[in-house]
Amino acid sequence: MRIFVVGLGAAGRRHLANARALGHDAEGGRLGDAEQFGPDAIVVASPTGVHLDALRWAADRGVHAFVEKPIAASSAGVGEALAVAEQAGITVAVGYNLRFHPALEAIADAVRGGRIGRLLSVRAEVGQYLPDWHPGEDYRTSYAAQASLGGGALLTLSHELDSVRWIAGEVDAVQGCAVHVSSLELDVDDVAELVCRHAGGAVSSIHLDFLDRSYNRRSRWVGEEGTIAWEWGGPARLLPADETLSAATPDALEGTYLAALQDFVEAAAIEVCEAVAAALPEV
Image 1: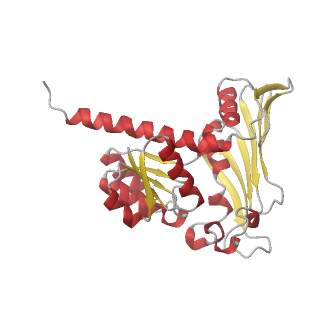
Image 2 (image 1 turned 180 degrees about the vertical axis):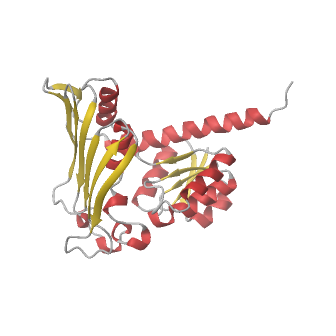
Image 3 (image 1 turned 30 degrees about the horizontal axis):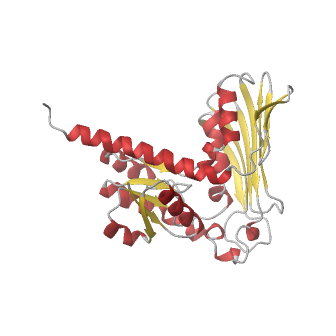
């Protein structure tokens, strides 16, 4: 498959290397360079604020699209772009690679398998001090720090929103706030706190921040018959039995990026095969 990576920042360079590692003919650059390359698929790794432009470009040309999370800076125009993509028969995926993390996969299997009974509540949180993200770079110039580029804790740290919805189910109602509370020089929110009510009845609380001086990512899943606790890099444990559902995985992150891209490529290949089959004359 010919894959063009739009945007060659840190995320884009990783996607380009992974696409090549998976054996694909891959190049990268600006969206304007993609036409000449003639891709079967694009990976959108540009700032969040321009994700939708790239998705529209792909949908209009019948090119599969893997869009880094989140899919866009707001919901405006997303539905229309996805409708065009569906009409074109292309695969669109969003890069929530933590769905492929062994611990979260184990948690999802345990919750769906009834290991803790009916899910009642979830607490998920992530925090990391924004100036520490890319040592040697001025955090104020990063997309995460700028509203015009689709930054802010709520959008940039949205993995937890996705994983909770993925495991706990659709959200029926949500309340919360996303605000700037620190002395960091940003024009976006640096902390967000959400409370969600899920269709199955569970309640979740989700915390996201650019402020924690020590990297923090953890979640706790409380059911009628047990609890699952997980902290980044450590095991996922079923309590009170203290059963290990997933062993400690301190080096699992890189593999999730590769797995997410591979999953997208396989889905896109199915779409291509079905399109080719549909175009074949009946014998």
